[in-house]
Structure formats: C-alpha cells, structure tokens
Amino acid sequence: MSLEVTVLGSSGGYAGAGKACSGYLLRHGENSLMLDIGSGSLANLLVQLPADGLGGLAITHMHYDHYVDIYGLATARRFWESTLPPLPLLAPPGAMDVIGSPLSDGSRTRFFECFEVTGHQAGETREIAGFELVALPARHITGSFSFRVTAGGRTVCYSGDTDVCDSLLQLAGGVDLFICESTFTSEVPNKEPGHLYAREAGDMATRAGAGSLLLTHLWPTLDGRRALEDARSNYKGPIELALEGQTLEV
Image (cartoon, rainbow, N blue to C red; front, side, top):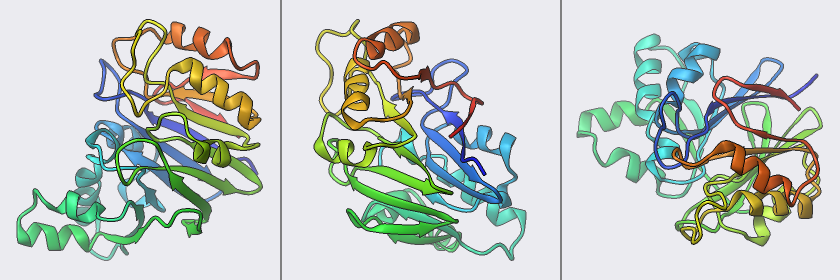
C-alpha cells in the first residue's frame, strides 16, 4: 500500500495568486495526517476530505503561513458534529498560547476542546493518526521543527522552514521523498537567514541520499523554473515543484 502525499499549499511567506501557504496531506489506507495548515490550505484540504475526515495535524512552527487555517478547521469540526472527538495535534511547545491569544475566553475554551495537543520532543518517535513522526529542531525561529514521517515502510521528510542544518540532513537520510523548502532562487543575491536557496535544497537532498525531491515554499514572485534549474545543479534524482492539488505516490 502506497503512501500518498497531496500538496495543499506551496507558497512561501504569503499565498500567491491561485496558491495557498504551506500544507501537505499524507494518506496511507484509511489514515490521514496534515503537515502544517497555512493560509488557504484548509480550502484545498476540504477538496480532498470532509472536515471530520482528517486523522491528525502536525505543525512545524508558529508563523502564520504555517498554522493560521487551524482556526477555520476548528470551526468546521465544531459545527460539523458536536460528538467529534478531539483531533490529535502535534505542535511546538507554547503553540496553544500563540493560537489562543486572539480569542475571547469562551472561544478559547471551545477551540481548545477541538484538539488533543502534544508538544514536540526532539528525537522522539510519536504515533499520530496511524503514522510515526520524528521531529528535530530546524534552523529558523525558536521552536521550529522539521519532520520525518513513516507509514507502511515509506518515509517522507518535510523541512518546514529552515536554513542548512545537520538535523535536517539526519531526518532526510535515505527518505523516499524529501519535501524541502526552497524559498529563494539564484535571482536573489542575498537570501534572508532561516531559509534555503533552491540549490541548497538540491545539495541537501544529495547529501541525505533522498530518493526524490519536492521543492516547496517558493517566494511567490520568484520563478519556479529557475528553482528547478538551481536544484538540479546539485541533485540528479527526480525533482518536482510543488503545485496545489498535486498528489504523489511514495
């Protein structure tokens, strides 16, 4: 049985025209897990699954382009059917303080009832929605993580947002699919720290021995074709640019 990965959002920083911010749906048999839930990704999730059909959610870090649609998900599940069990949620420590901060006391209580929250512990294997997930710190803001997810003997590494770091190489080692942020192309002479050039994503994939590479989190005004060219200069395996609605069999 294959592991399916569907792109729900691939845009970096903000949702470009016709795009959504970070979100990936993993499915293995009847099990489903969403990685990040950035702005616009919920609408694309609901094309794939009803609000009550998602098995779990894991968030890499607390930047809005990776988590903000969690408010809509909670609303959809709360009003879908009051008997829905809390959704398993893996999140950075302190995530619920950030998410709850704009909510009134009553709304915050109802929101928290929608989720069964577990904080990331670096290097520990967590079972969530039928998947095994290992998180390690990313080189981004404090409390950022990258993931390695396994189901049915197939493995996916999802970088979240990060700069070059050893922990990402460890997570991506020998994976079947490496979903790697490629915020900047060679069009940008001096990148912002905490993110990767597409060529660096290609280099990381080669060093990790990844079976295939999916470029994501490209800044909306940059050229996807350039990102692919840059990554191919350092990685000779299969490469694709993430597109909303695209499903890959791992």
